[in-house]
View 1 (cartoon, one colour):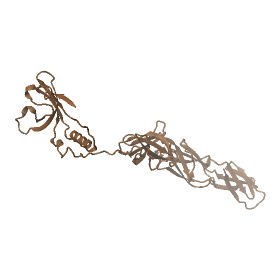
View 2 (tube, rainbow, N blue to C red):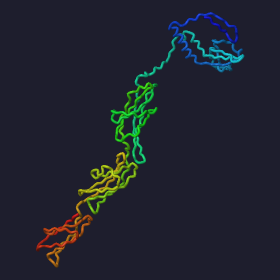
View 3 (tube, rainbow, N blue to C red):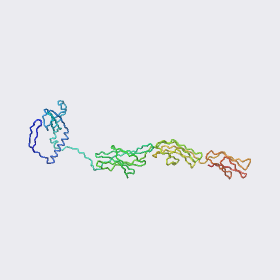
View 4 (cartoon, rainbow, N blue to C red):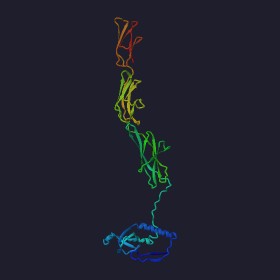
Length: 394
């Protein structure tokens, strides 16, 4: 092979020719050493510089090694850094000017210390792209609710998890189940910070959350399943009923008129009334109720407010009332024989105070009579002693 070149295109314009033989690399050790040389050079000589100077200021050629102080213009100042560079390229942008491109020089590259020794290379081991990606950890769930203008309670689930830290991560897919994991429903993706929300969950149901990780190859993990969470909806009670009154109907003492103060909560469903047992299993919206007594005893009435989530108020309003079903006994019963007709007996009494009295039953001897008045004349058949009794009829 014959080459022609110049010792310097700036100083010697006469081309020199020389015949040389070039042999290619024909074994692995040669190739390895050459590769190590270039790898070590790239690692230890990363710095390049370029500057332009006067042609007369520099008497160097491509391949020469020069020393540089930093800054170049202050070579006499103590403490300046000195570094050597190899000239890799020289051009003449204009007359009497030379622009040089130089690379950082390391003499150890040309000795046995570094030039023929394989460098230590830190190789990053990438995850197997066909393997299932790692799952999330530490899934935490909580329920939140809010009340709409019409009083309806809307519940939703908020959650967090710890996403796996691996370079092939693509997305985290969210699923939920309401039958202990027998059926799963897709619900989109979770956020990049591991948070998520499941809207419009149903009150009175248990939800499980499963999160699957997908890598960039589209391979999906089996998924991590959370502990179930039971949706109670609103779990704070409504306001208490302030008071309740109980008044016996004067026209019918079996009837008790109940009335209580209203609760103004926007999510109020109604009121539940009790007397021993619940009288209104389905809450009523009215603040009045008529109770029918079936026995004479002390009755205890209580009422609580019920909201749209089925929560009762904490403290019921209560009222005790003694109910006696039999009518009041008449008083001052008198029986006087008529002076003008001794066969007649005039019976009188003071009326009962009850407004539900329909009349009185008078018993005179073996005879009984009904009257609505408070006086009655009984005809006696013969002389003797007679017992007169009276009872009320409602």
